[in-house]
Length: 238
Image (tube, rainbow, N blue to C red):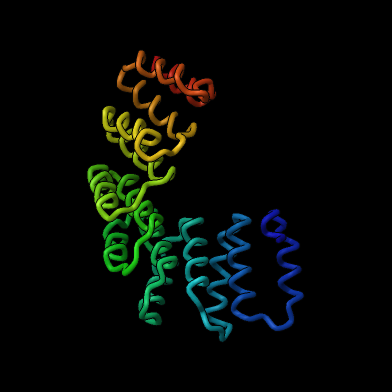
């Protein structure tokens, strides 16, 4: 409760009041630290659990600790947790595996991310979004778009986050027509209402390509055409 309001001091006080702390108590504290954006402390608590406290670590512990490492871009500790998982766990949990894919992808270690992804017995939309954003953010735009096509072949329907990743990837690669096609498909094919993040990606790329008339047509067509970020993108392009 306190972490949802980012009341870090109260979180610590409440935790100290627990006389017999079990692994749920510690898991909740790690998650609370991440929720309060105190990822460094969350990472330190995991170290304390593995080194000084004799507690059973569950999937939630690992997922929370990996999320904390991703939040502070602590690559070395993330890899240590991965090594600890390899030594101690046989069955992969989709939440833990997603956290591993995410943390390796965030550091640009696409080979490690792909290895974890390929070994996953069960993949959900978070798994695919994480691997796509990893390749898209680190100069492998063609691979990212290829993975999106594979995701569709597996029968998964993209969500709003997927399209932000795709539009950003196309923006980096300068794929104007592809970007436009993805944007148009958000609502026309998948029935998702595009938001200002999707819209600003499209306007920015159309502006960079010098296709100002099309950019203005989109701005006049959509209700968030007057958003300051969108207008700044168009002004910059002009």
